Image 1 (cartoon, helix red, strand yellow):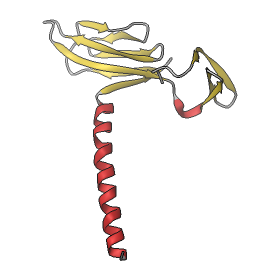
Image 2 (tube, one colour):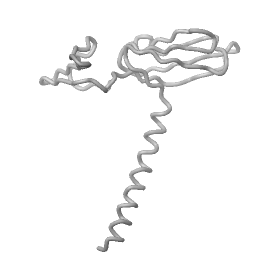
Image 3 (spheres, helix red, strand yellow):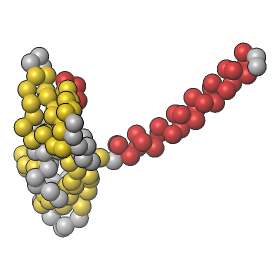
Image 4 (cartoon, helix red, strand yellow):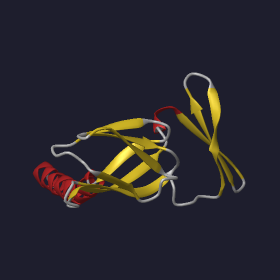
Length: 138
């Protein structure tokens, strides 16, 4: 096999790999991401009249003003948020993913138990994260 053939195969493999990653990024972009115990500001183009959070145990939404919503991650998981205008028309209908900030975390596995520690610079155990095995949550 010549160098030209190798480079052609490598270029084709790279293009195929990038094409397969594209849909994953698009799907991730459809979801609002919030870290647990952190807030995220949502600015709206139209005033909101009603705020509905699918599971208030996972996330909370606070109306700062008619065009500003503060979304807070409460526990690990997914839910959705629905923002309606005065006529009941949806302004926002999005899924929410609440996860841990992975930047400074350590996971400790002891048989079937998992503990998550947040380290910056000292490590402290996450109280809600002492689950058995690997559940579907991050």
